[in-house]
Structure formats: C-alpha cells, structure tokens
Amino acid sequence: MQLNGRDVSRETEQRLSRFEALFQRWAKSINLVAPSTKADFWQRHVADSAQIFQLSPGPQVWVDLGSGGGFPGIITAIFLAELNGGWVHLVESNQKKASFLRTALLETGGRGSVHPVRIEQAPRLIPQCDRISARALAELPLLLDYCAPWMAGKENVKAFLHKGRDYANEVNKANGRWSFDLVQHFSAIEDDSVVLEISNLQHQV
Figure (cartoon, rainbow, N blue to C red):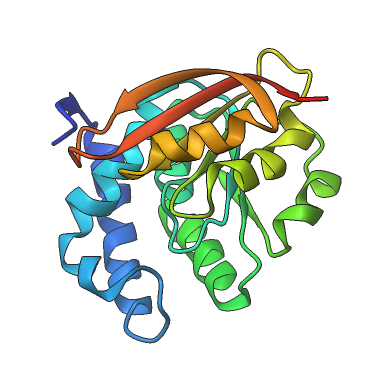
C-alpha cells in the first residue's frame, strides 16, 4: 500500500483498515466529517492526514487540536505505533467525538490519549510538545493563539496546519499579530490546498 507515493507497512495498513471500519460504523450515528466526504475516506481523509506525519516523521510528541473524526490525530497515532515511540494528545471537547477517538486508539493500537476539554484549557494538561497539528479548525490568527502556549519562544516546536485556497489571506492577517517562520507545503491531495509549517512563533508587540 502507498499513501502519497510512499510505502506503508502491512501492519500500519491493517491498523488503518481497522480504523476505517470503526469510522464507518460510528459515522452512521454522529457527524465525524462532512457527509459529502465520507465516501472518499482513503484519499480525502487518510492520505490527506498522512501528509502531516510524512512531513515530520519520527517519534515526537504531538498535540492535535480539534481532533474531531480523528484527522490527522488518529492517523499520526497509527504511524507512531509502528515506531513504538512518540505520542499524540488529541484535544476534542465534543464528548461523543472524544468517545469515538478513545475507541479508535484502543482498537487500532495507536499511540495517543484523548483530552475532552476546550483547546484553551489543554496547555494546563499538556505542558509541552514537539509538534502541533490542526485540520479544518479555524483561521490562522486564532490557530496561532491556540498554539502559542506551546510554541511562543520555543524554537524547536513546529505547527503543521492544513489550509485551503484562502491561506495567503489568512497568513497576511496573522502577520499583523504574530511573527513566525513559514514553509508552504503544497498538498498532495488537493491542488488549491497547503500544509503550513510554522516555527519560531513570537507575538508582535
């Protein structure tokens, strides 16, 4: 099996398949993703999420903000299981979605834990991390507000944020409040989307 042109081990493929079966069962009763995208599970959600880990592979500690249906947090946790290292802290305030995420980690053996709290409360529970991820959550200025407790003044912490076609406008808005280093990775899945890699986050005085 390949995702985004890269080989995936049989063990990881089996974990992803278990996650798909679980996802499809739960998605019948709770809204895990936009209904129009459920049928394209592997490309629209799994491959799209896998880009995050593929951009920063290794046994790192991740915080996944607004984990929702598990993208990219559960996918990252499954990749980390093969490394037998690293961890994903999945932050999801919706109790039903948090229950789904806990079940997904249990059934796939993904390396992670679920924090059913609002994002603003999460830094008290998760004091530090190496990487932050978020997908379809909020505009960039607000995302950087969320990321700041883990990133501000810490050169080695990076955020990997999925963004759509209006990403340039969001970057311009964020530049008024924050300074940061930015690398734009064009999506392997959608022509008009990117993954923004952000580091050296500092609040503008």
